[in-house]
Image 1 (cartoon, rainbow, N blue to C red):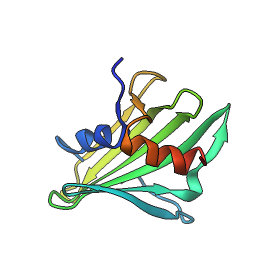
Image 2 (spheres, rainbow, N blue to C red; image 1 turned 180 degrees about the vertical axis):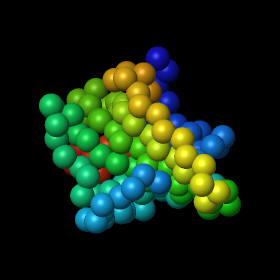
Image 3 (tube, helix red, strand yellow; image 1 turned 45 degrees about the horizontal axis):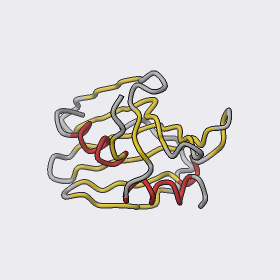
Image 4 (cartoon, helix red, strand yellow; image 1 turned 45 degrees about the vertical axis):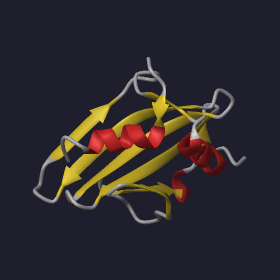
Length: 124
């Protein structure tokens, strides 16, 4: 397992391929732009489940018309986050979904991007 920056991992997921159907009630807060990819956190998705902070990230790749939604679980004490589920779609109708086991797609919350996510999700 290699700890990667969380937003960079989401960006990599957008590169090769495919928006999760969203119910009302989202409150997206743009947190970072990396090249042509805009990252946002759904502030209404942040909650504690089994001691982990759960939250959803949206990544929009503007020049390729792709949107990815990533369900995550942050371990605030360890400063790590696991991506649990990803769904990426394109305007061409392509769709890619992937579930991850805990630890399979682990990222660090200790770099600059991670510290930003940590401050929002872990409240510090």
